[in-house]
Image (cartoon, rainbow over all chains, first blue to last red):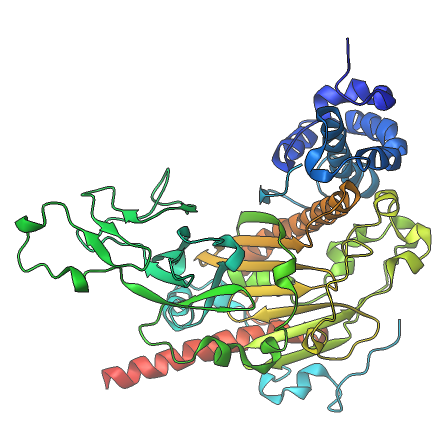
Length: 110
Length: 420
């Protein structure tokens, strides 16, 4: 069975079906629905691969990423969002954000 | 960090003697009566930014803007002659809302050749002329020439589209913006077309939210996580390099160190790998020389200037990207918040990730402001305290509330003159 990600990133396949999400609203919702151990496990596996993942994507033009490479970029975007919880706040939700919400309604894709 | 010099008067606040130094009231953020006055005195009189020219890329591009406090819905459209025009979003026949998509109370956008009313099919061209009336012969003395869409005053500056809801605006847009804001002209907003737009409905008065973005005094307390715990100094304050007021508008500039010269422990791992973070991408494409007015205090090393354009627009200019906020009042204790982050379009995945990091970090810290300000609103509404000391680092808060009060006072004076 072929994976969702480029073969060089087969080690991240366990996270691909959860975190290859196209838009920030989807990624935000997934972060809020996750437990801290789930976020940490994704972060611990993916963060050491971040620089290599960006390098790999950049072998292609931004507007012409093959499907598996575009999924890798989506995984990178998710890692960025998850790093806020893991590195900065030590909890899933932004500290002291109370009941506030801020919706991203326009963004470049991918 | 050097101690930034204050003006010869000894403080930024005393440099503007009309501001005074005494405690101020925030009753203007809880009073329903004052809110009703702001509606007339400010939002039906001031130039209001509703979008960017890039939002209307070609003939027939349009969007609608709901301005709740002014009770207005406005259509912005680019005509066949390339001009951007604004009209009240009201059909001249029976007053139906002319342009809407799924829900008449929601804003919409698109491209069209003409506007057709959903009710009886009357049509208007992109310049607002009434061009078709179903069964025109059934009407009495109908002069289609004078039944075009009602225009709203509209002008653009640096690619920002402004409207003015007054029948005859007291000032043109450029005169209203004045020399300090005018000094931003030439900043390459038109090159920073990769946009991340955010909206939020917040439980605070529009001015309270603006206040949080026109001082940095709150940053160490509310946003301690902006620096990693290893280098966090709980006693450390923050001093801005420069403040200025010009008419109803304000600016604050802060210094900024070149990020890659900082020791690694002063940044989070995600920032080090992506070379982006709280203050945006560490390096951005060359966009040419910036206008001198972007750093009016000549701060060196310059980091950011944060311009507050009266009444409800704020533009934060960095060397290679910008942030824009708009605060739209919806009641004394609520407002609708709009944000845009604009970057030079990413040429590579690495640049796209840089922009993603900046946009994600922005949202985290905006959520802290948004979460806390609901508490500020609730506490002010108790009325338990009625005067508040304002420090020199908060001089722009003092100026903002004074300008709002001045505009309301001017409106009341004129209203009395009309009555007497």
